[in-house]
Length: 271
Ligand SMILES: C[S@@+](CC[C@H](N)C(=O)[O-])C[C@H]1O[C@@H](n2cnc3c(N)ncnc32)[C@H](O)[C@@H]1O
Image 1 (cartoon, rainbow, N blue to C red):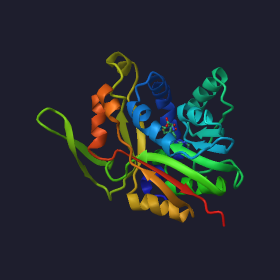
Image 2: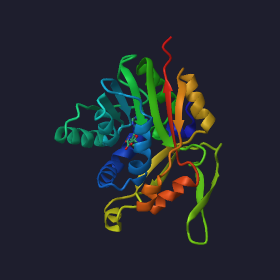
Image 3: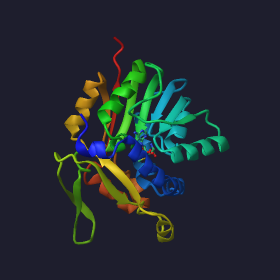
């Protein structure tokens, strides 16, 4: 059952906030300022992804479609959706310029407009922790998978990216540890404000900070949501920056202090 704060900020309200974020997010990510995505999360996600050539896939919470396009380049026939109409517009405009055969639509992860077993796989990159009622979204992803299909998703790591966290710095200002708390507090819909730190100041000043509602769950809750959807966990990763990436972007070294991200792949049983 939804909590008070989940009722206060439902998936439509989340979509309105992401609509406001969409222009800055699309501009800054397309200019290469999402270093965590480009150097860590997307390479790790693609490393874990099984062969998708010729498969029907669904991308849930696709944003402006960067990762959708990369998976389409591996031969998948993709449908992609997002709750933010503005993100869907940017994704469609890019599809018109650079054709990948991707069908984009505005829809919510919690009520997928597809028949049961319509897809061979589903994916969600860094979107599931932004969806209110993730249990329902995971059940929906499982429902639209054919038996034997897989669902792979990445999220902020629930054990460390807790409602209350703070980097501990050494005498040189390097991040060497993290204080984290409120792990069991699980306040739903709290809004975080930030912008990509690597973007130059003149660009950061051009845009408002992102306002992102977060929906926290403990690790056991995430795993139990998969089990409740009859999905079987088959692979996991906690990716961090490579030596090469850190040489170019030293700030990425903090991803080796604690696990910032969690990637999971699970499968719908055939029987
Ligand atoms: C951090 S962005 C990630 C976007 C993209 N997948 C990527 O990796 O760049 C999170 C996305 O989740 C979307 N989102 C949040 N709630 C959603 C919902 N209920 N249904 C579909 N998309 C949702 C947001 O609009 C936003 O585009």
